[in-house]
Image (tube, rainbow, N blue to C red; front, top):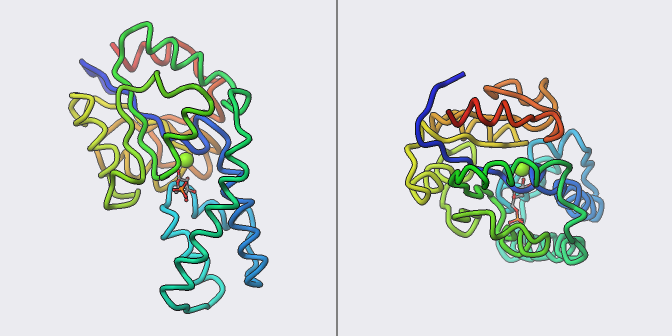
Length: 220
Ligand code: BG6
Ligand code: MG
């Protein structure tokens, strides 16, 4: 395990803290069905960690469609409106198992914590599930110009935490997110299937597999 001094922890949101990946999928699936594009859960893996705009570009490429800017923008709005319908019903019950255990442990050790998400909806979601106060800074889709796998989102988060990039740990469920963390020279922790997230430094199916000894080893 890499040895570090002041350690910062950075969490992705969708698919790590809350299971919103399923809502993104349902909203994209609805649009794909309307457009007659075959879109499976496997296809959805490429959408994880990727900006809304890039997701729509990929979807249209899959369907071999070229559309006007106006139509493109309209579908972006439509997808987000469908997604927000799911989000609006969210509460603390949607926090993934043992996420709060990990956040509480890090908080008790006064570890700086950031959210590093591609989503423009990150802040309202954290408010809905009442986790906003855990984070010292929120870096979301409104703050970045380059999407994961570019490391920008995590480098901004490290800077705002006042921690060197090489001393940060990132929790991610997306291939693009693991690649972004690795490109930032951070310790990457994959949450999900090892066969998909094989580039991560560490891998867990979910937070219930993470014990405090693992966290303490990363901190000390
Ligand atoms: C990421 C999700 O966190 O946010 C992607 O993994 C999503 O699937 C991206 O496309 C953008 O989210 P939003 O909420 O701004 O459409
Ligand atoms: Mg994610």
